[in-house]
Every structure is written in C-alpha cells, then in structure tokens.
Image (cartoon, rainbow, N blue to C red):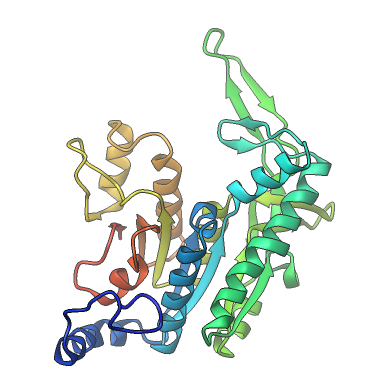
Length: 305
C-alpha cells in the first residue's frame, strides 16, 4: 500500500492498471475480515518516530474503512524513561519489569494516557479516522491486581518475593464499552493503565499482557503483536511463518525461543487459549506490516493458531 497521501510516491513505476490489480487481489482478504475484531498492540519504540506514527495511523484508518474493527493497545516504555530522566527520577527494573513507586506511577499514567495515547489518537483523526483514547480505568474496562514477583536465589534455591510497587496484571475485562465504541464507528486506542477495585489504586500493566487480555475477552479474529523483530526465528535464524501452540511450547522448552521472545509467545498462546483465532508476532517498524498481514496471502511475521 502507498505511503503518504499519494499512491504513486512509493511505486513510481506502477501504472494505473498495476494499482487496480493490487487492490483487486486484496479483495478476498478484505471480505475475510469484514466485521471482524482485531487487536493490534504497537510498541513505544515505534511511537517515538513521527513517520512511523503517520504510517501506522494511515494503515489503521484503511483497515477501519474496509470493514475491520481495529482495537489499538500501545506501550510507552521509552517515553516513560525519557520523562523520568527529565525529572531526575532514576528508573529501576527487576527482570524487565519497572519498579514503580507512588511518584513513578503518576508519571507513568501521565505519559501513557496524556501523551502517547493522544499522539496516536491525533494521528488517526488527522487523516480522517475517528479515534477515541481510553485506558483500562474507563468504565472499569479492565481491572487489575498487584503482581507478586518471585525470584529464586541460584545458590540456595530459596524464593524471594520482590515488591514491584504499582505494577499489575489483568484481573477482569468488561467488553461492553469496547463493543459500544467499535460498533459506533470509532477506533478505540487503549493505554495499559488500570485500577484495582479493592483498593482503588492505579497500576501499570505490561502492554503486551494488557493487549492479550483484551484480545482474548473480545475473542478477536486476530491479535497482532508489533515488535522490533520479524517474528519467531528457527535455529538457523530463519523466520517461522506459522506455528501450532504445541510446536511453540516445544520451541520454548528446547531453547529455540528464548529471551524476550518467550513472554511475547506466551502472551499469544494465552490469547488463543481465551478464544482468539490467531496471534501474530511481526515487525512493527517494517513499512505497512499491518496491511501486508491482513491483505496478502502469506502475511507478515509468525502466526500462531
């Protein structure tokens, strides 16, 4: 698909007939996803670049206009770190999870809900879409519980509980507000912030986990996890186009899937267990990766289904 307002800019050698053929070939895929809900998680790294935000917004508006119901969930780790540094608040992490005290959670909420969220909403609205920014707090769409994080001492094998502060995980999803928003023609853009009903305290939730919980509750046709890599790689570092849940778990056990890819694959598997038809891990920085996933025969990235 074209980048920018003109179809001719990225494909200067394309004739009008070439463009018509591309659109015609996309028709069966458009029909496949008509009136289907898809949940797309975009990372904070991509949202830090203006051109990537613009391309992403254009792709989302096209999905909506072709009959798909997109639900967007975003992260914002780099933006949070930048703001904390600007305020001379040092970021601390434990096993990749940000330690979040009372002062930090206020900054986290400000950045995610008041900055990153509105950037995406504004970008979508600027090119003719109708986006609305929300978080898990709105209408108690998603409620949270505090994470209990355990670390095992390698020498004594004694488990130690680490208090991460105001870091949570999804407890319950109420799809009503998302159903209302999506069926009214709006595009919901969600920040991964939620409240614990028992204490009314605010928690920061990992955006991948938040998106997976939303996708599962909606029983989405597709859950797209946009990352900085092209998908799951095999032992020779070649892209694996498709995985069954059984093979994905086997690749985790034998170490082929390792490091930061493990929680992403596990999030995809949990979404499938909750009723998602297919979860896809793909490179969100590749031009129009979302469109290629939906509107071409082989898609992009790795699909687990």
